[in-house]
Each structure stands twice: as C-alpha cells, then as structure tokens.
Image 1 (cartoon, rainbow, N blue to C red):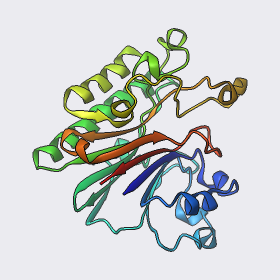
Image 2 (cartoon, rainbow, N blue to C red):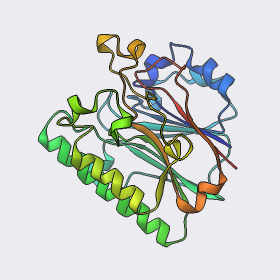
Image 3 (cartoon, rainbow, N blue to C red):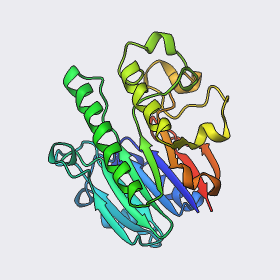
Length: 255
C-alpha cells in the first residue's frame, strides 16, 4: 500500500500544473494533501473527473484561502474524523483522521510559528494537544501512521543551514524538543529509519534565492509510525523530482 503526502501550497494553483496527470501516474492508494487553501465549493467538479477511483475527504479552514487538508483514498476507511476536538485549533482545518482495518492514519498540517510569538505558542500548544490525542488512541490499542507538514526540521542533518536558523521558528530548540519527545514515546521517523545518515535530502525550499535549484532546503514533511508498525514499512522516500509546490511529496510503502 502506497501512501503519499504532499503540501501543495494551494490546490487550485497545483491543478494548473499537471497535478491530475501526476496522481494518475503515481497511483497512490492514499494521497494526503496539506495547505490546500480551498474548499470543495471552490473546485470545479470536472477538475477531478479523471480520479473516480478515489474517495475525497475534505477539512477546509473557516478562513478562505488558508490552510486546509484533503485526503484521496481508494479504500473507504472504517471511520473518519476531522480535527483534534478543540475549536481554536479545528477552525483552521488542519487534521483528518482515517481508521483503516490495520492502522489509523493522520493527515496533519501543523501550524507555522514564524509570524509572531503568539503563533509560535499556538504551534506548541497544537503539538501537545495532538500528541495527547495520539497517546489516547494508542492506549486503546490503535497503531498509528502520522504524516504531513510538521513545519519543524528535527536535526542539523535535516536542513542546509542549521546554525543560521537555530533562532528562527522551524528549528528552535523548543520545537525540536517536541520531536525528540515523539521519538521517546515510540514514534519512528520512517525516513531516518531507512536513511539514518543521508544528508541534503529535503522536502521544502523557499521560493526565494533559487533555493530549490541550489538545494538549500529543509526536511519538514514526515511519516511517523508507532513501533508496532515499523516491521510492515517497506519504503520511505522523498519524491524530490516532483514540482508544482515549494514542497516535495513523500511516500510510505507499507505491507
């Protein structure tokens, strides 16, 4: 089973850049999209007419043109829920949870903390609320796959210029500490599991300074799985040759 995650930085924009053709060629079983910046009323029905094999699950932000996540799934999940359960977070349309027979999948667009101290605290609070939700599900025996744009690079190897960015949101010690906590609680960064020392592999590049061509990037998009699932993971890669956004898609193959 192939699960692909992709921050598209605007669904309406990427639909004009060969997105449908890419999906048909890639053929993921599940496609998790973040930062769609749209709701289904803003997308022409015919724009998805070549993807009839997929079921669509939307969670759009209340604010138009902002945030939002979408899941395309060939298999209908047993259960679907939207949001964490706290209105201050859920009005931004950041999470979809899908329960399949052998695992539960989260598609999450975590907040960005760069604009202000208030938004940084919002991000940290979201992290904590999300982990509390996950831990509750684990106590009920659920095995979890978590994917999306975490908006934080974890370690020096995960961005091109760590020293220059250690005082900026996205690589602050307090943000990275939360990712440490995730690992300590038994969630596994699948890319690092397969590529423990691979450097210069990133998932996001600023549009400025010709950064993608120079590969001055950050790895901020992840697939984490709980320990009980890692033996079923066959592949975890970055699809770095796919364009159309300031992010690259990532892929997890699981038995």
